Each structure stands twice: as structure tokens, then as C-alpha cells.
Image (cartoon, rainbow, N blue to C red):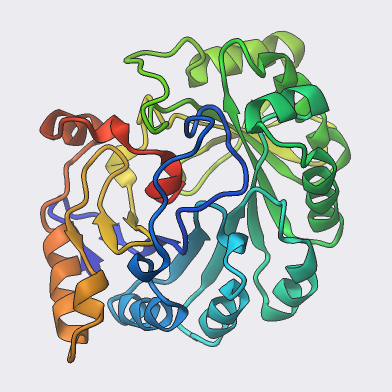
Length: 327
């Protein structure tokens, strides 16, 4: 079992398989993109499989596959097959922009991978295309609806972007009226590859809730797991639910149970911290398992208590793009 220096059990790993993405969302990176890692700097599928086995042996029972956009990797399904064979893994989930997932939906169902987070920041085509700088609206919407109607546990993640998609909040919420889906509204974070700087936001989780309350004053709060990053709610008569994620306000740090590992091997103990260590070269040496375990233990043994504490320790942490640190 992995226990950090603040007595928090770490059983959840966000494992990035690539830093590449086929969208260019304006809150994530500049229009020209970022300097993506060369393929030899990324973990191979075999390395990701071995790393996952090591993590599971240390008590990790939940792995979320992230990117970039994970399905940019054409060999991703091989990793997912291997993960599905690990009996101690209770939860395998994927975060995706839903542009490339279509051909894999049937096999995901067979593998028992039902938890899918879809990143979609607008329900209106024009707004979607403006934010993503790409014309993939139909593909994303159709894949999202297919996942919902075919019984996947779908959570739609929508970042509240001042001056861009606020008018989409209530229409996005209407999806929960007709479908058993969770729509979560996230606070914007300054991990955008240096395309924008800010030290405060207007649309924090309280403002989002006030905005929704004006239209739906009858919504009520749901009980959520202690380690949940989202505060969840339901509107009476609606099939689905909605939530807010205080990713900038960081109200959930006290119960944080997660670790991030980037596609190039960086171990990141907090979104607002720099990498603690890198596992890639260690994984490529002989007899690596013991050293990998030791590095993970070392990293979680020196975690910041909160995201605010982590931020104070590091300069230029916001120069990163979300796509390079696992979304």
C-alpha cells in the first residue's frame, strides 16, 4: 500500500500514454502547438504494461489512461487489453476528446472498460470549433452519444472559460435531462503552454453553481466519495447528474489519493508541482522493478499537503501545457 507523508492512501494513478493531441484547444496550448516529445522519449506499450504491474503490486487499484489524446496511439488498445487482465485493478478508465474512440467502443465494452471521461467544452458547434480550432464536432458529439446510449459510465468534462463558452453551460446541462450522464464543470487552470497567464478566475465553482441555481433553483447535492474531486448535484426529474470540480480553488487536496505519471516518465505528485523524478531511463535499465518502486515511494513520501503549498515551491510551473502533464 502506498501512503504519503500526510497519511493519505495513494491508490489511483493517472497514466499518460502520449503528450500529443489532434485538437488545439486554446486554453491548453498555443495555436501552433507545443514541442511534443519524440517517440523514443515516450514509454513503449511494454514499458507501460510493466509499470502498471509494478504500481498494482504497490496497491494501486485504479488506473486512468490519459494523454494528450490517448487514442492518438494506435497501439493503445494493446495496453488496455493487458490492463484488463490484471485482477487487482478494480477500475480502468479513459479520458478522451472522443475524436478517435469510435472504432474501439465495441472492444472497450468487451474488456469491461466502462468509465469514460469525455472532454467537451461546448455543446454548440461554433463555440466548439472556436475553442478546439478544429472541425470535429460531429465526430465528438456522435461518439459521446453512442457511448452514453450503449451503457458506458460517461462523464463529460467542460471547462468554464470566461468570454468563450459560458452560454453553453445551461444547454450542456440539458444533456442530463435526457441521458443518464454526468456533466462536470471545471474551473480553468493556467496550464496552457504559456499562452495565457492569470492568478485568479471569475468563473470559480461557486460562481458556476450560482449561475446554474438561477435556472434550476431546485437542484440538490448528492453524497460523493471522500476522494472525489467533483461536488455532485441532481436536478429533480433529470436522468443524469452534474458536478463542479474546483481545480483552481483546490478544495479537495486533503483527500487526494492520486499520482500522475507523464508519457515521458515524469512522476508528478500534484498538478501544481514539478516532477519529483523520472522513471523512463530506470525502466530501460536491467533489474528496474526495485528501483522504480523505490522512486515511487520516495516521490509520495515528500508530497505537498495542498496544491497551494506545492505552487509556492516551484517557479514557472504554469509554463507546462495540460497535454504534457496528463490532462
